[in-house]
Length: 542
Image 1: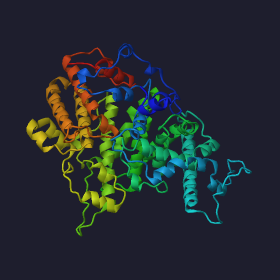
Image 2 (image 1 turned 120 degrees about the vertical axis):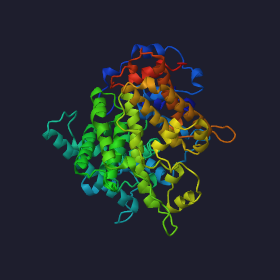
Image 3 (image 1 turned 45 degrees about the vertical axis):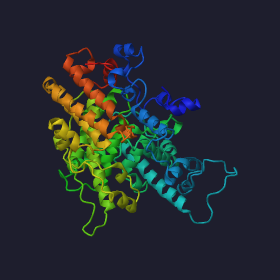
Image 4 (image 1 turned 180 degrees about the horizontal axis):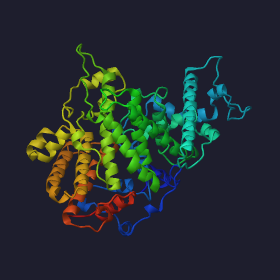
């Protein structure tokens, strides 16, 4: 189904066109051929009558490896928000606008290239206005010059990684072409793809602090990850396809660094420094990017190597237990920078847990992170995290709204599972949409763990009661005083669909139905198996 923007303009929808080009450097696998369950279910329209009005279109698109990439679904939704009245998405700020529009200038008149001996890409006698006003560089060109220096350093790092892979006889999918890399990793492409990441994906994976993010100081692994992730944002162009040809070397580069860091790291470090943090951020975001690939070998690598490596790094860094320090000093001032440092660290821990649950569900495997170890602070309200200056932060923080920061995930889960309904709903009515998403993911993780340990039949009833409490709480907090649905963005927008999947899984387990491949307690490397389960039971009454 095309989005509203494409229906009105008559364009081919991103949902439909973005996955026509094959994934980065890896072909599709026959493992994702549609099964008979999926083909039978495709015969008729999807009814939401048994789902209480909850649409599961996002889940179907998100899990369908034969159609859309997961990132394409997220990007298409983000692109549609600007055309929908009442959505809580801010318009592009001036910096974003500049990053979005300067790609053409830097691709065709990359002045800093002169300093490295590269020829101009435009005709010499073409009548282009010269950006060189005087003998000195303008601030914009100084910035571009500095970024090109970083890009050449990144290309050198990738070349060295390729040589290292050759020395250890790694299976390499393509040779490293230095000239091709230089033509792909341009200032214009880098700025555009990083802008695209923040525009289309940041709100679904908010582990970076956008107002203070700087292309000139971000670590090279993080910069590389954002370039690749941002290339997934729209219909495939020559530059986006070309940059993803380096994803295999980029994967080895990032995860080799992560593993090396783990070997040198002291367990449960008192405080993770910025370099260590950005490497973990890069690894987690790269793993999300990699989940778009349908190649069997890649998906097994995600399940058996990459996700366990990220989990181990976050655990060893103590980020699952990171607590937010008071951000109001003894002098009564607001420590914005200290707040940002804490918030990014605890968010890495929390979003690792969320994505690990997603991987567990996709691959039908036991979760590798226990809810009991998630003892860090819960994420703050988004408007506080998005404050763009110390003054803006102080203004938002001074409102002093009640929130859930005092509770950890184990404490909130205990209240959801054990507290009487009345007490639970009265005391937790201030939780945010983000915390509700975290809670439903924690419930899904508990169910997957119970399934894989043959405890599902004994835990179904208490889990069903907990999902009922979650849904009542969600209905209460997601509507305003007049009963109108409040806008949400990112995965919070689809929390009710996760609730539907959680409850449906419990009801199917309770029924004893074992006719679906997903119900077998065997790992699967294709998202098609989960997709077939959702289609098969989309109207399951239970």
